[in-house]
Figure 1 (cartoon, rainbow, N blue to C red):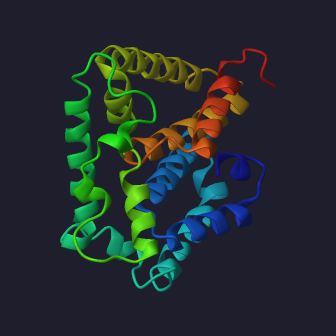
Figure 2: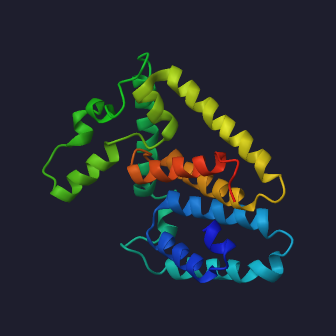
Length: 229
């Protein structure tokens, strides 16, 4: 989104936003709103009414249209209804995963990279009663890794590694804040917004997928390159 907007591809940005809303993936919507809002604040603050009003109108229209259409019976508005037990169940399950991760993290070096699923209770992998193949695949994906990057590091690597990870993220944050307040570093700022949008996704979802890890560290490497142009 930051790069599309930077190069004037507002139409593509609206299309990407529409697909994100229609997909009903709450954390991706939150990441989108964070990156979009951050971009407007960082780069369009002075010229908001002249250059960004059409984008905002487009996003609002996307939200309205998306609320009427979705890939299933639920709209993104339904997904954010915290009074619906079905919607809050996924939040509760994340809390339970984090709690379980705290228990596994009591081992000095955790349970080892990629071993979290082996420790998940059998009832979570295959509940009582017959289930179809698609449901079994979904259960495996849900329980494959903790839906939080900090708790995942803790469970698989232990508290010493979690401390190192927290220090690393803190270093990234402080460095990026300094860069954001500097002038004439627009390219790097675009990567920073993209990186933290990905970080938000990983804070609420498993961050073990190769596609996620590749983008995460690719952006980080670009940001750390002092010769970026």
